Length: 401
Image: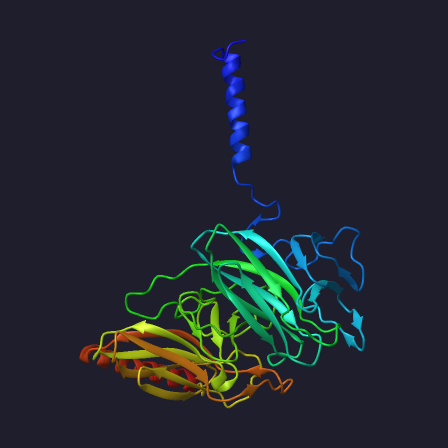
């Protein structure tokens, strides 16, 4: 059979195709295409080979926990499981993992190179002392989150961090950086999810990016604790696009399914007084007057008064006490300032350290939403003042009626 015959050409084409397939870089079988929501077995509810075994430490390897690679001593725990004199906390569902000293779990996901993503996860402590969880993405973010039982009485919280994809695959890893004397200690991890972030278009009449907080990390349905946003000083890569968390303590990202939100679906609850600051650098024209407006409200989570917010705009600072009129659950606030540079910082924190009246220990605070900054001239300033007065008159009329 000649090479130029039809059968010979087909055989040669098949051989070349096979060689090309062999030469092509192979993707790992465990690199699942990523979609918004839980990672592959992100809730650890898929049983390993042999099924779930109570109080079982799993060995290192790619198949010990389906979907995850294991390093060090990782324990797959069950809801209600006792360890010593403690009941181990499983944030949601029936199973989670506990990371021993210097142990980690990781997963590779396919992502869009150059895009930004937010990772949401639930975590808890097993011992009274401080425990931490290091979250890293190869070539991207690496941050250690301190797990503190300050924000609710359930013993666990949901957290979110952001990263920019530097390749078409992202290796996400959770590691216990501690070396505890007690081997039964170590952070518990559950409910790992991912969400691709989009930067909202900047409105023509507002220089604040994502001022309504509608764009943010994945939030699990039927979760009444929101998502905590730990320290993040990188405005370019943030779980809340455009915003920085420039404080030692977290702020809480909330939604209208479980909380009262002044406008839309999402908002920010400020916690921990001056230790919970959210800020943004906005574009301004030097020597031009601007107005910062925002909505101040309550999350409806039994937070004890008084509640107040300190608002910063350039060299201006002003506090606003939450004192809605009648049955209103939010109120408008305004700060006028003169820009001194091409970029101006706007920031907010809670004046007080508030706790919930139903447990007197969980931190809570005022809510901010609908943050706007726009330039003023004489006519615009008069218009804004008249609008504010008319708004107050309408609110008073509603109360009297």
